[in-house]
Each structure stands twice: as structure tokens, then as C-alpha cells.
Image 1 (spheres, rainbow, N blue to C red):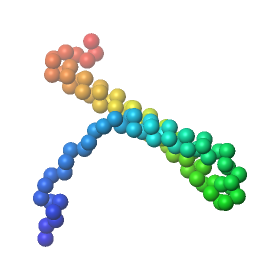
Image 2: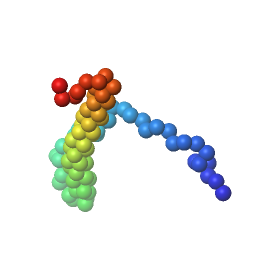
Image 3: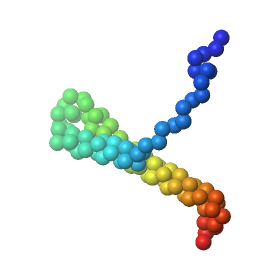
Image 4: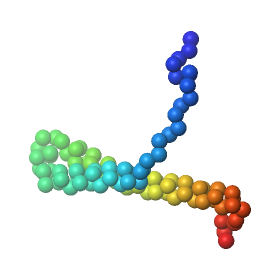
Length: 94
């Protein structure tokens, strides 16, 4: 028996403003963390302090994500420049 997904090829991955998206999400996590700090007592009284710490963890993991996507973006640009230099017959170490 065949599946519908076997009938066609997978589409190419979408590329977008990845660095901006991850940076915006990281800023949002930190804003949520800072916005909840004044209400820490209420969160503690109701057993919801994990909300505060989840926002902090999201912001910190977002910083790792920003580093990663910036490194990835730089590597993609370096590879594209190397291909262009190779196609033109010039040396990239000039």
C-alpha cells in the first residue's frame, strides 16, 4: 500500500529573516520575565513561580539561539562568497 506523501517530492525549506525572528522572540521572553518580576509574591503565593523562571529560561536559551543563527548565517554567506570566487577564478585569500 502506498501513501499520498510518496507521490511527490518534499518542498524546499523556506528561508526567512531567521536572525530577526530569533532575536525578537528572545527579547519577548526577557520582557515577559521582567514584566512578571513585580508580581513575584503573587506567583509564589499561588504556586506559579515556574512561569517567571520559564520566561528567564526562554530568554537565556534564546541568547544561545541568536548566537547559533548568526553563526549559521555567517557560514552561509562565507560559502556563497567562496562559490562566487571559485566561479570567477579568483582566490578567496587575496
